[in-house]
Every structure is written in C-alpha cells, then in structure tokens.
Image 1 (spheres, rainbow, N blue to C red):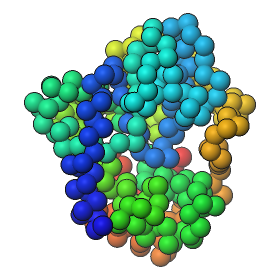
Image 2 (cartoon, rainbow, N blue to C red):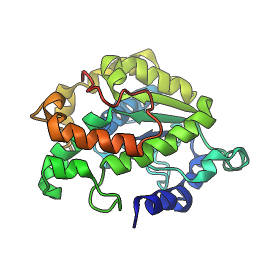
Image 3 (cartoon, one colour):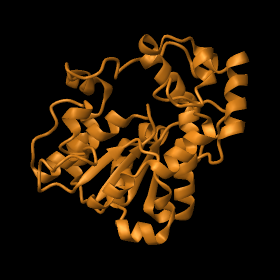
Length: 269
C-alpha cells in the first residue's frame, strides 16, 4: 500500500468517530506523548472528586474504568463518560452536519515534539522492531512495520490539524512539554474543556501521584514492558548528521500542520 493509499484508508475507512458521541470528553493522544502519565493523573483526580476507588496501576487496563476505550461499558456510573484513543478521524469529523448528527464531544488533543516521540518510541520498542536508529527514522509509508514513525505522525498531525483548523473551539491542544512544566494547569484546562469540576484537593493529589517516584510504585506487573523507559542519548545527539537529514526531508515532504511546534529545534524536555 502506498502512503497516499494509507492516508485515504485512514481518512475514509476509520469509522470509530461514530462512537464518540456517547462521551462527555475524549482524550486523543499522539503515541509516546505521556499518555499513561496524563491518564493516570486525570483518573486520580476523577476518583478523588467523585469518591470512587483510585486506579491501582497506571497501565492502560487499570485506567479503563476512568478513561476507557470507546467500546468499553461504564464501570463507575457516577463518573463523566470519558474515552481515549490514538485515532486518526474519518472525514466525517470535518463536516458540520455530521458532527451535529454524531454529537461529537470536546476533544483534548495531547501531542509532543515529534523528535521526542521518535526517540522515545525507538528506545521503548527497539527490542521488538530490531532496527537501528537511522533505519527507523526512514519510516514505512505502508504503515505496517512500526507502531509509530514519521509517516504515522504525519497522518495524525495532518488530520487533527485539519479538524482543529475547522473547529478550533472543540479541540484543546495540549503540549506534553507544557504539561511537564505545569501538570496541574493542564489538568485544570482539560477539566474545564470537558465541563468537569475537579476539586482542588483532587488536583493536588493527582499531581503528587503523577511524579516519577510515585508512579514507579504503580507499575502493573501484567502490563507491557518499558513504559518507564529512559532514553540514553540526548535529542541533539540523535538528530544530527545523517539522522537530521532524513528527519528534515521527511518532515518537509509529509507534514502540512505543525500543531504549534518548531519541527527543526529539539525541545528542552
């Protein structure tokens, strides 16, 4: 399948957006963008605000009662109905009549600088994909070789960039880097966007629970490995010489929206 065919398939054959109308808020995240961290903090804040049990771990399965898959049934009926996904939405999300008919919810769009995403993804999954850094950076236009690469990121960035441009009030763009700087502010912003009144005490507890030290005690023994992996090389080292040439060429070729990032400058975090 060519890259153009893969884009067409994502844009016209992924009907998962039709399930989104059942929810009060929807968390859409790029891959390797602090998804488990963000979800865990928000789940703790929800649990403490609504007086239900906190999640035992920060794994995807442990968080499903709070921010589940669009196909999950509610576990705690007193909680707002929230869901999360890495989805690339159907073209229906661009059309006002379809959005009204589908009652699409407010979205929190959580993204991270592509350099950091790529470095994190390769460090996490190198044991599985078994390719070196330069080969991974070249990517797979077909979309079958890697869970996430520059081609996947371009498809995600471009579709959500289109939707955000057309319906800016429906999407709260959240940068991972800003969340690192002010996690409480991000949680408050998402809660406002979803019309959820989290208590100040719950927000304090969520931020405390979201520290690396606290989360290291909440690793699910049944979850996938390396969720708390640590990259060994700096982004400046990884994106230099031939690697930077490959990255810059792919970015110029594929990306039509930047979602607020300077693609060619490594982030500070």
